[in-house]
Image 1 (cartoon, rainbow, N blue to C red):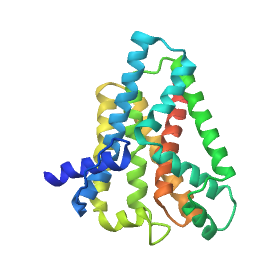
Image 2 (cartoon, one colour):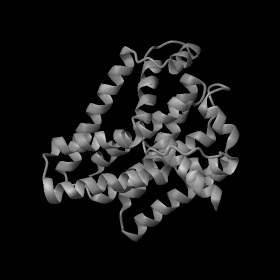
Image 3 (cartoon, rainbow, N blue to C red):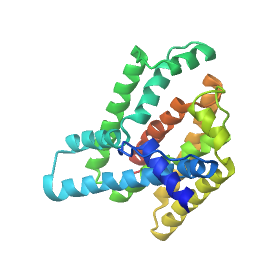
Image 4 (tube, rainbow, N blue to C red):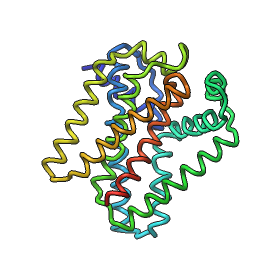
Length: 255
């Protein structure tokens, strides 16, 4: 039980901007729980987004455009921009159109280049536009809650089924530390939970989003292997953001 609690605290420490200063002893079990908790952290973030939309509707009635902007800003605040850093670095590396070795070097470079800056701007514009359109269509609050949860299954699936692009780095360290089978089973249980919710509340859209998430996972995994030789911390961070953006776009097309 103690290792489970530590695992969740590590997840909050690693994947959110909560100021948790305490040092925790990371073991195989606590690291496994930490990774398995990624979708749960997404669920918590989704609940905060839904709470913001509810409070805005009741008390502030901000314009759909400004609300959309805040819906994009809030996850950045909650994560400290951690995952967007991965998107920027991945954009710099991929759009350099260099060979695989050079792309990996660019991923490790902390400086932001022109392609990374353009990737960031385009990503933010797309996300604001999608949220704006969804708000105009009165998207149910349920999707704000569960979308980050569904999207983060891709992180688990890609992590446990793909080799790392190099022997060093944070992704490689965790691949050697965690129990990958346990993480895979966590993803299976989470997806089964979504299917159960879809059946109970008669929301086939949730099943459609799960299918879209699985398709995104397959395509992203193949893309990462072809262009980078595997995954890295930055490429995993990109899944957090791009995977969720893709699912929001799918929802926009469905509604």
